[in-house]
Image (tube, rainbow, N blue to C red; front, top):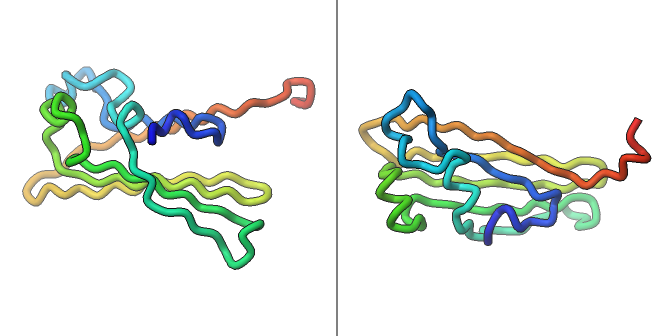
Length: 123
């Protein structure tokens, strides 16, 4: 599933993008590769009353990247992106698991959530 195709206001997830002063990210897309990668649907859960809350989890791992992206970002990782819908709120979270045993990786996550709003109701 392409994260940008979600109908929850088209959240865009920008992870692992270029940084001008970091040689290791020079070959990555400017808005990161996670937003254009294929995410796996992991699970759907709800509280006891399914009309109250719904949580969707999506995953992306370094092993699921295409060869070109893996060559540009040769670090092992797992990402889990969760979206929780409740009657009056939307909550998102991102869990990053660095699977590198001997080196840290730098992660930047930028969430750009776009929601359709009828401007006649905005004050």
